[in-house]
Amino acid sequence: MHRWRWALTALALGIAAPLMATGGASAASAVSAASPSRAGGPLVHAIVTVRPGTRMPLAVPGGRVLDTLSAVHAEYVAAPRAALTGLAANPAVAGVSPDWHGHVMGLRHFHGGRGGRDWSNPKDSVLAAQSVGGDAGQPGVGAGVNIALLDTGVNDTPAINRASGRLVDGIDLSHLSAGGAPATTGPFTDGYGHGTFLASLIAGGPVPGSDGLGLGVAPAAHVVVVKVANAQGQTTLLQVLAGLNWVATHAHSIQIVNLSLAVQRPTFPAYGADPLNWAVEAVRSAGVLVVAAVGNTPGQVGDPGLDPQALTVGALDSTGSQPRVASFSGSGVVDGVTKPDVVAAGVQVLGEMTGNTLIAKENPGAWQSDGLFRGSGTSEATAITTGVAAAYLAQHPGSTPLQVKTALRTSARPLCSWAAGAGAVSMSWTTVHASCGDGWHRWGTPSWDPTGEARFDAAEWLRNSWLHGAWVPWMASSWSASSWSASSWSASSWSASSWSASSWSASSWSASSWSDESWGPAP
Image (cartoon, rainbow, N blue to C red):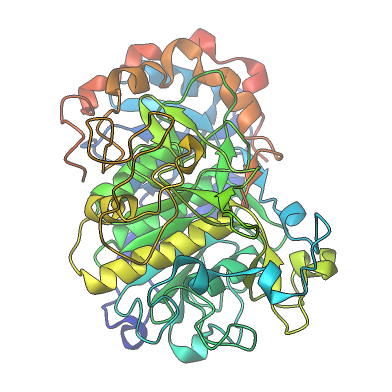
C-alpha cells in the first residue's frame, strides 16, 4: 500500500504528523499501468466516484486502481473504455469522469493599467487589509488558524516565508497525472506566481507600501502549501481532487481551504453534482470551511464554487467613488441558491510576487514602484475572504464551517445587487440590516437566508447529476485546457434524505452514453 507522509512539522503548527493512506498503486506507476490491453482495447485514465460507505479500493473489472482518494470517495483508475462504461451497473458507483488536463490561466488579470488611471499611485490600487476594515492586518489576527492553499505553490517573500514559521509545506501533487509521485519534502515553490500572490493577500505581514499593516488580512495565520499545478500552470482533475482529499484527511489540523480555481460550466447541462463539488461536500463534512472563487465569467458560476455548501466569492471593484461588482465577476442561481455568497476586493489588489515567476515575466507593467504587484480577479477576492474567515475563526474557535459562512454573510456590507450576494465582506461581526429599493430585502423578511443554503433544491441538483448521459457533453468540453481559470479559480440545512447514497442512481449511467470521442487513450 502506498502512503503519503505529511510534511508539516509539529513545531510550525503545533500538531502531530500522521500518515495518509491513499490505497491502490502508487501514482508513479500510472503510465506503466496504462499500457494497451489486448482484450479490451487501450486503457484510459479516469476518476471513479463511489458512494460513501463503499469499501475501497473498488475493483474495476479489466482495469487497475492506480490510487484511492478515500476521503473524497474517489479512485483513479486505468481501464478499457468498455469496462468504465460497464461501471454503471455497479450500485457502489456514483459516476465516472475522464482525468482531463487543464491549464491555470490568469495572466490577463495581472496588468499595468486601464481606464486612464495611474495605477502606480497607491490610492488607485487596493490593499487587502484596508479593504475589509476593522483590525485586519494587525499583529495577531488569524492566530491559531491553518489555511490550506490549493494552488501553484508558494515562494518565500518578505511578507510571508518559511523562516517565519507561518508558511509551511504540506504536499506537492502537481505531477501525479504525468506518472510522478506526491512529494512531501518542500519547499514547494511556485514557478507560475499565482499561489505566491494569493498567500500574501491571506496572511502577508507588513512590507514597504502596506501602510504599516500586514499585506494580508490575517498575518498571524499559517498558510499550508498544497501544490496542485506546475510551473506552467498545468493541472488535472486528479491533482485537484487529490489536494482536496489531503485536506479532508487532515481536517483535524486545517480549518480553511482556499480554492481560487474554477471550471466554467456551459449552460447545459444545468448546475449539478460532479467530482469536484462532491469533494467539496466531503471536505466540509470533515469540518473544513471551503472558500471558492465564483469565476471570471459574467452570468456563470464556476465549479466547485457552484456547490451550495461552499463559501463562494465574487470580485468587488472598489477603485472608484462607489464600490460595485466587478464587470468580470460571475454570478447565478444554482438550484435555488444564489451565488456568490459574498464579494471582496478583486480589482487592482496589491500583493507580493517574485520576479522569477511566469506571471511576473509576462506582466512587467503590474509592478509598482515600492515593489508590490497588482492583480485583479475573483482569485484575489477569494484570498481576501479566506483571510477574513481566518480572523473570525481566531476570535471564535470551534465554529463550524456553516457558522463561519453565516457570520461572514450576515456581517457583509450590502450592495443591493444579486451579483454581490450578501454583500462585501467586513471585519465587523455584527449583523447588518438593510432593505433595497428594488424590492430585495437583505434582512428582516423571509426572503433573506443567512446561511445561503435554505432554498437549495436537492431534487433539481440530483436531476442534473450525471443523468441519462447528460454529463458526457459537459465532460467533453469543460475539462479542456482553456476551461481552468485560476483567477476566475456538516450543514444542518442539508437533510439526510436529500443527500443520501440512495439518491444516486447507478442506472443513470448507460454504456451507450459514453462515446469514443469522450475518451482518449492514456499516455
